[in-house]
Length: 257
Image (tube, rainbow, N blue to C red):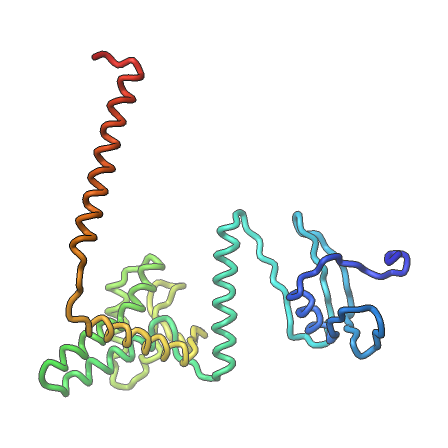
């Protein structure tokens, strides 16, 4: 009946998908077909149904809002698709955060190396044990560019030496330089559009600092000797049981005595 009247029926549609279609077309989700007026109807230029692999997709083109899009991920295995989905979600959230806060810093470990350089320089003006703490904090910040080099298969020591030399320039022109994944060296991260939201970097540094302070505030740990001895006896009993069972099965297979 619906087909004869050129009415498309999608069957059971998830509530989340209904809300997405309504947001894209400018319509309103209805729970009944009664009293449907023009104000609650959505519009689009082209609607079509396409089959991609074993799945069928309803495509809405030319939506009035123009602020929604659907990305179809394909891959040879479910694990690859799930990893691609996580990476894409992270990228979208980073862009959203950057657009929302309107403040970015140089990525690729550039801001970490610049903070490390500043702390090392500041530590020289401090006498006492505090200088050691500040230098250790500065060294810990270099883990970010080092990890980027390790993930890309680069010589981390060589790249970090180049970054230290560049960030040590008195003119300050080396501040935006970070790890260049494309060439295996260093490059201006700002010029290459490798940016990070400033709020994300600030929150990461604050969280790491608080975690380190929490660990350092622990004076000692308390162990339960009774629990450890019980675990040791259980492990020994399990090993003994497996040994006896193995000898019995060996004789059952016709081994010579």
